[in-house]
Image (cartoon, rainbow, N blue to C red; front, side, top):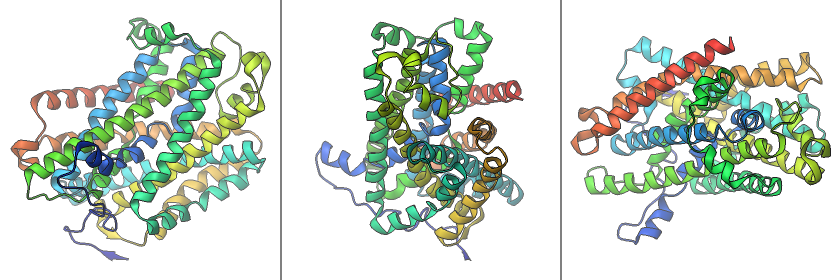
Length: 442
């Protein structure tokens, strides 16, 4: 363990490790830049978002698809700003936040960011543990202990190269996408209803229950750790920062990558909501938990003739894929935060093991205390999402301020006026919505 100086690169072992062609055509260059967006996408469709989206469809059919669309547009804006910060400055959000704040403020922000990583871990652990129980009948407590060992997964993958990590995560994301496309296809949703649902409706604001669920979708979508991670892994491509044209090209292709992958996350979240609407709308069924959804997909009284154990198993496979892909991104984000805020470099296995054990401990305690009652355990997942909502402004506000700074970004790459206005508007909305959500929950 040793302290690192200010010049230490973000995720030093993979920073600038991927070369991009200088004079190649559009598609070859695009292929070289595709990848970081996939890792970011995982945070926007992790187990923490699943139940909210499906419950939204089950309760209000397709009406909340417009909320999913709005959340995705907000995510696109913030993630592009995050990538731009890293590419232009050569530093990540954690490093720059620490440099621009006092020592005491930096420590406070670091603690909040670390707690956000742990809260993210809670969703991954619960999702993966329940998926293992559903797929292999592994007792939940044992499944949770198994998830603690996946700390070794990224350590092995890092030896293979960052490009391999991108491919593995992309494969897991593809599994999730294909599973829900298949299940939605079988459910035969109403195409016109889906299109109508993408148009914002005033009744969302007038209906208290609908508004509450909408706030849950928005508040749980943008994850703090994704903003830190995005500002770091955008630097994995080798860029000549002395050449503005090279920076501009990197920004162009990184933006395409980020937005393309977030469109996939948008599609997955829409599929989840559409599945909830097509299969469960208007039916008296308990859909508040993963196990309930798993059982419902094989119950003919709930989903009709398409019900089968195969659909339930596909759901569990997608849940496990989501938990494991989130594990990889959470590990990387934890390293970015640890090294960026306190400039303390320790072996990846050590920092990951510490963070993972702190996350596993409360989940394991809940699992033992509420043995056989997954619904109670999943209440812990809800609280983790609430904390992520609380932590969000502490990442968003520094991101907006830093990318709005001409002194830091330069005249060419500072946010244009329309982005500044949009960013502060979005930030204000997110803060107000999260405050309202937190008040309602407690």
